[in-house]
Image (cartoon, rainbow, N blue to C red; front, side, top):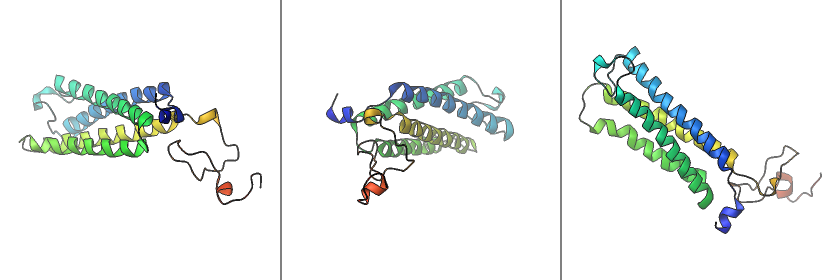
Length: 179
């Protein structure tokens, strides 16, 4: 473990339990999106129209892959939290660009009609859900050094991803503590 990682320990149980919950949400986003587009709008997403409102085995594989993507995003976040400065900022950029690829890809497959747009919309919602949920779980998974907690309710002036010490606004301005 590097000295940097020792400065910013990660509560892996909290991070991975949140990542698992995110995987369930991502899979459900795919299922709800498929049901909406196929059932409510009549757009055949990932399966022929005869397959029904939830599609076929392709829909199950699509939902499973969304869950796997959420777990991969959790692994990426864990790696970044341990090894990179401004981990959450890098995570948002990486997942944002991967989501952009997932949104554009259906339009490159040569399929006509509304199906590519529906698939792109589902990919967008799933990607945003993964990015937001894993990022918010990561915020709570970084363990403060020494287990320090502020009791004044004052927000830290110099706090960035758990790297800098918690220095209150008053102390940052040079005012002595306790005033």
